Image 1 (cartoon, helix red, strand yellow):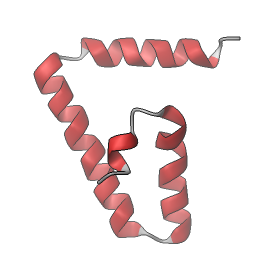
Image 2: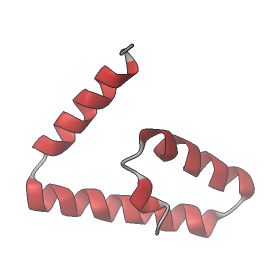
Image 3: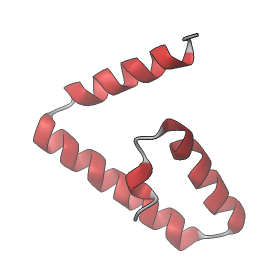
Image 4: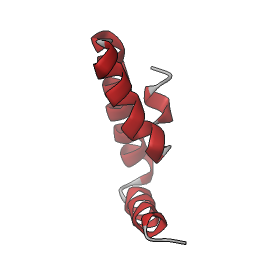
Amino acid sequence: MLLGLLCYKPHLALLVPVALAAGGHWRAFGAAAVTVAVVVGLSVALFGVEPWRAYLAELGGAAGGV
């Protein structure tokens, strides 16, 4: 679950699932995926989708930055 709570860090959100799958840690992979889904669902329920739109817009802008 702690790995799932790190989903807001883009580089960890990409690296951790690959590392868990490569190591065959399927229970941890599943727990992280469920945790991410619950956290995203709760944040949408509490704050709406606008913070996620802003996050994705900033994430896209950071990729093309200096």
